[in-house]
Length: 218
Image 1 (spheres, one colour):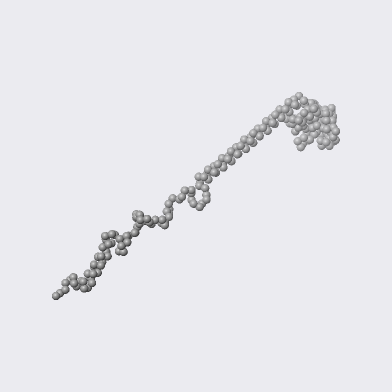
Image 2: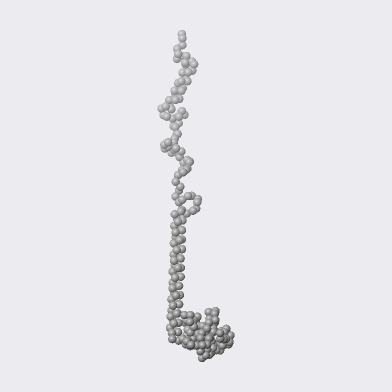
């Protein structure tokens, strides 16, 4: 009797292999696990929570091209441009204030010096007012050094003798040379000695005292 198709398949072993394949593949379709019966653990974070998208946790590439951290560029050690501009402006302001203070001080000192000169001139004018003994028609000349030059004043014979004896003196005022009493010279010495042109000291008098002989005429 001819063997059936089933008997032929059993003898050849094909039916057994098909059954084994169905038995082993059935758990995978039902539970979604692996062939070994272990649950599939792919795409899950540690602790059993799923990791959507399967992106790697930790250990990923750094954020290249992103924003730099606060505080400027790392490792440069330079202040931000804004801070540098503030420091420079502050330095300019301090220097400008210092220069303004120095300028005001210089102006105040110059004003004080001008005031003192004006006050000195006023006192000299008051002291010499009406004290000049110059003679308009005097015919004798008395030379004397003053201001690194040889100056001269016209006197008569009596005044020339008094000048050489230290009884009279000569002062400079406004480009003029005035013959005055010795007392005026002494008082002027305490106010403005730079205006005294000649006062002979009889005790130390000699022909070379003032560099010009008393009887020199020219």
